[in-house]
Length: 322
Ligand code: GLU
Image 1 (cartoon, protein in one colour):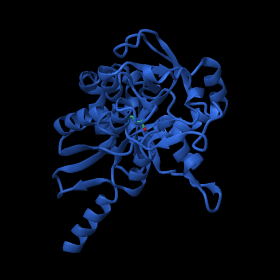
Image 2 (spheres, protein in one colour):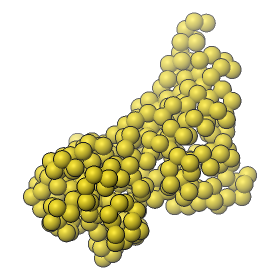
Image 3 (cartoon, helix red, strand yellow):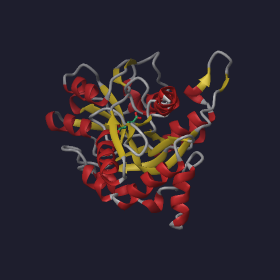
Image 4 (tube, helix red, strand yellow):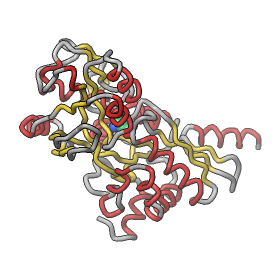
């Protein structure tokens, strides 16, 4: 009997879920990002809401290196649910880009990943200081740039976008910093620019704007079009004027989408219950961050890049959401 229980716990642990005993609480880990981003406050609100509204569920939000790291956490069974960029989810599911098996040089698909909901746009914000006299991404040649935390989706976007300007880690000086570190080092003049892929307003960018005159570098329309030929998840977006203190002009740039990802082996009824609770209490996300306003059940399936989890799909079908 003891061994059976132990085995059950080990199996559950390997899924990022831990039932303490039959009919007792299910512990659910949610992977987010750094504290100065948007995944973390939204994840914390989700965890609190799920713990309060789904019987026997105890959810917690974990900080992490964000998208790519979160895919690995899901694959390893360390978490059951994660916030991930749609482009990164797609690469992981098909085993392309950073998920290629480099030695065998062939795709290594994470085929057990499952979609739960599309959330809100995450805007690529390339931030510098007015005093640096940097007016275009091309001017970042030779400069020190915060390109995102190791294992972040931000870092992947930074590489792809720099390449569109004929830049890369060979002719710039990349620093792998999370958003809070990037904000501090930009304010202190240590780095010259920072890539931030997150819903706006992002806490880290607000932090820079509160102490310094910031500038957000544009990614012009034709560059976004060119990027889309290889990476179709980039969309056109404009950051409205005055999103940040001292940002008096709107800025043209690009965005991807945030989504919630789970795994095929996470129980159907659990994902169904979590999906139902999410949409019944979505106003909680709106309180946690402005981008929570973009999170709606009606758009939850729009642009889903991978197979949907059966429990989520059942919920959307019952509600007639296509
Ligand atoms: N999208 C970012 C990334 O994966 C994280 C955004 C956030 O923390 O809000 O790198």
